[in-house]
Length: 474
Image (cartoon, rainbow, N blue to C red):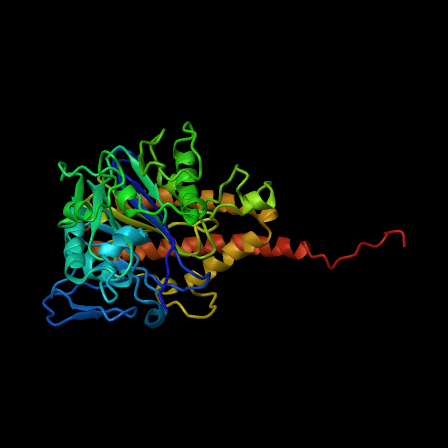
C-alpha cells in the first residue's frame, strides 16, 4: 500500500517574517484519519561504513555515507506498511527540510520521462538528504543528484531552509525538476499542484534545475506559451480536482496574508509567491495551516449552503497527522537557532509545541507511539482533544481558542527564557539542557490540555439529551 500525501505548504523569507527568521512549514496529510506518528531523534553517525537504506514502498535501496548529522524526525509508526517518512527536521548545521508535498505532472511530460517505479520515493528522501547537507542550496544539489541517479517514482515537492535562504523544489517527472529560491521579503503557498511559474535560466542564484530540462521541453514541444518558460504551464495540471482540492487553499492563504487582493478561489494561475501586507509571525502560519475558510461561505462549520460548505477542501483536516513550522533564527546563538514548532494532533484545534532542535532525545509520550489508542501517547492524546472540540464545535471552539492563545503566550516567553538561561552553556552540556527544557515544555502543555479537556468533558455531560426537568411544585 502506498502512503498517499495531500499536504499544504507555506514558506516565509527572512525579511517577510516579523523577527527576521526563516520559516518553512507544511501539513502532513495522509489518506486516512488514523496514521500514528512518533517524534524521535536519529543519532549522529561517525565512520560507519556499509550502512544502507531500503524503501518499504518499492525496491529502492542505496548505501549511505559513513558520517551523518543528528536530526529529529517524525516517522510513521507502521513503517513496514506505510514507509519511513521522516517528514521534517533541522540538522546540526541548522538546515531545515520538510518532505514532501505531493505534486502531479501532466501526461504530456510524463509520456517522455515517465516515473521510475523503483526510484527514490518520498518515504526515504529526508533520510538520505538532511543528515548530509550544510545549507538549503546544498540540499537541492544533493537531492537533485540522487534523482538523476535513481529517478523518482512520484511527483514530489520538497522544502529547504537555512538562516539565509528558503528554497522550494518540485520533482514532476522521472528525472526532471526545478527549484526556486523564495525572495527574502516574500512568502509562498501551495498545495498539491505544480506551483513554480516563470523560470529564469540566467539567474542561478534564484533558480536551480535538472540537467537537460530545457532541451527536453524543446525536443518534445512541451511549452504551450508564446513567450517565457512557465514551469507550471509546461509540467503542471489544470483539472477539476485542482480547482476544488488545490487552488482554493492557495487562495485562502493569500486572502489571509493579502486581504487587499481580490482573487477567484478557482483561478489556476494564482501566484505562487507574494509579498504579504504585513510581516508574518509563526502564529499567522499556524492559523493558516489549521484554517477551514473561516468567514467565507465555504467554512464547513459556517452558515453557507450545504453545497458551499463542501465545495472546497479545507486546509486543516482530521487526516493531518502532524503539522510543523521549522524556524531558523538569526538573532540568537546558532546552537539555539533551530526550533521545530510541532503540532502532532491536527493544526485546527491543538498547539504547535516548540522544540529546540539541538536535543538528544524527545519526551517518551512523543517517541513511543502505539498503533492503537493510548491516552499516554501525544499523538493519540492530541488527536482526542481535537475530536472532542469538533464534536461540540459551537460550544467548545472559544474555549479551545483561548487555550491556544494562552499556550502561545507561554511559548513566546518560554523560548526566550530558555535562551537567556543557556547563554553560558555549550557543547553537550547545552544539548542536555535544551533536551530537558523541551520536556518541561511538553509537561506544561499536557497540564493545560488536561484542564481544557476536563472542562469540555464536564460541559459535555451537562449537554446530554437524556434529561428531564420536573415542575418544582410537583
